Length: 80
Image (cartoon, rainbow, N blue to C red):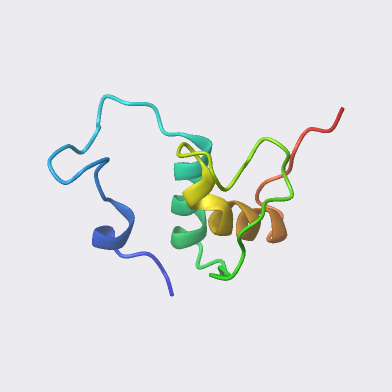
């Protein structure tokens, strides 16, 4: 499924778009996977990145998109 304008352009809340805010990596992962039609596995609940945790409100919601982007080679981490 490719991204429609309505599906990719949602606000940060019901009454705020957030046009003045920077896009997070989690938000970018979702947009990237939707735009390019990357297959997303809804069952993925754990990230392979050590800085992405399911209980983190900033990016936990996007684990399935982050992992899909990684699998498609659109994202990669920086190891130490």
